[in-house]
Image (cartoon, rainbow, N blue to C red; front, side, top):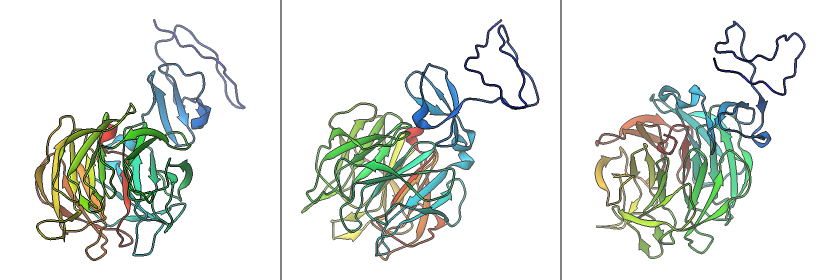
Length: 369
């Protein structure tokens, strides 16, 4: 027989019961009342601790290293949500809108960022989306966040280590990482946040090359940054980090040379899409190419977007990648791919506002697997 240890029990009006030991089965028609508290009230942590997080409205448990969400609403494929924030119309915009990744159709209004801005970056856990940096038109160090499963306006999170625009971001289930951008000096800075908390970013290390308008994606362990620009050079560079550590990025391989692109991923494969290509003649790109995140090496051709464009954003579930917005002419186009295959993208629907230089995240991307 196993035992249940109950401590710090408070009986409420209408409640009844006693502290029990030697119990192997608990039955009844009424719900069990778990401890409830905010993210900041996590104290006395032991492995196996279970609680309801009132900050993010999720059920969570502690595995000895970090708090993990066990809400089925966030981890079931049909309910994965992609969120697009900010951008330029061409004036800076504070729009947040969302889609259900497993379906097709037009985006729905979610709320507003704390400040209208474009050329920002986004990352996410299974519950929280985080938007960082951008241009307002001043350089911004703003980080704000949303609870992905709800709707509403973003809330202040803290500040990046540098005010900058055109960085890229990726994440695991616990940590978000921002890399590159322009400060106005083009930077190789990488900094990170703990997504479940609020506060300022912390220095992580450096990219292999200082650049802006790059892209990023991740598995649960590795973040990958690809492409970008540093006047007068366009880059085909891909480099990677181990998200749970700190340190400088390491060379991964090359993609087709371009800037102003985006990326998304499953737990195994990263896909880079769109951008601005300088060769053979300067042009907007519809290129999709991919990597296997756990290895190193050059990208392989995947297919084409439905519309050649730059300044777009991407998000994903564990199976589907979705690309939204961008410009040749400023567009509201959303298209999608099945990440495990190779093929051209298919029309998904439209954003609520046509815009470019926006950012996107989701509660089901490859870094959460």
